[in-house]
Image (cartoon, rainbow, N blue to C red; front, side):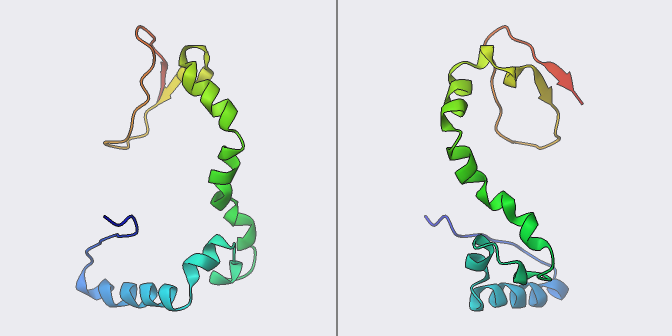
Length: 106
């Protein structure tokens, strides 16, 4: 099993353009450049300030003690005070302690 496999099916009129873009990203090592916050992948204007999301894993690892605390004490956490209906189907669900009913925010 490979974690790097993706598949897609496109209408014929789009498939050539998408394949050309995929080939360009491979040939020019653009995935690595993305992880290096290389704004020249776009206009090289102000994109560098949009790439902070790439650090989310490292940022969250710095908060691991806090996250473990939330996970071990859900009934004491504000995490369970509200539930948002996002419209995402078949997503993972957080299960609150028995008898706890969070407020529903739509």
